Amino acid sequence: MSDAAVLLPYHIAFGIETTLICIGNAFTMSVFWNQRHSLRRASSLFSLLVISLERACAVIWPFRHLIARIRIYVTSILMVWLAGFCVATVNGLAVCGLVSHLTSFSFNSCTFFICLCLVLATYLTIRRHLRNIPPVCTVGTQIENSSTTA
Image (cartoon, rainbow, N blue to C red; front, side):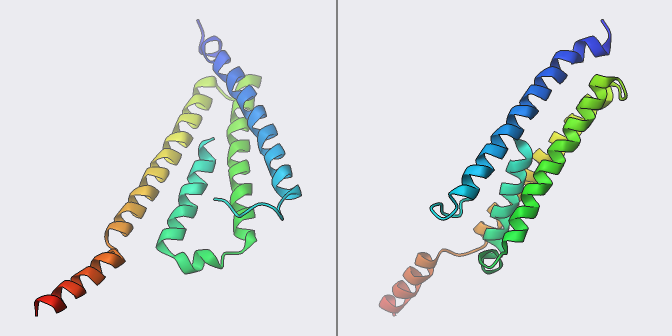
């Protein structure tokens, strides 16, 4: 069996998944856009990466995060869509025979591995940052305990 025959079901499933994700994202964006006055600002793999980076900014630089412009969020959404389009393009080229299926599979695997590593690094950075901040109630309790013992 050739590489193309082995990876063809993978590419078909990935193409269907990509199409459904794009339709779902377009539907979600239209709902948020049409009902944005009644929704609060709320906080696929590329989306998880952007969400983890957004959370890291909120924890590490909370005041900058509060005054962030909508342009930053729009740029983040466009970057997620661009990354998804690049992955879908490579898969499409593999199905057409312009790129080998093994190259397409390697590109997807590397892309997803890099995203997972970045998400892990982001959450480890958040954890390290939160461990270095002393809790407010602990500091107050220590002050009260030291004044009562003196």
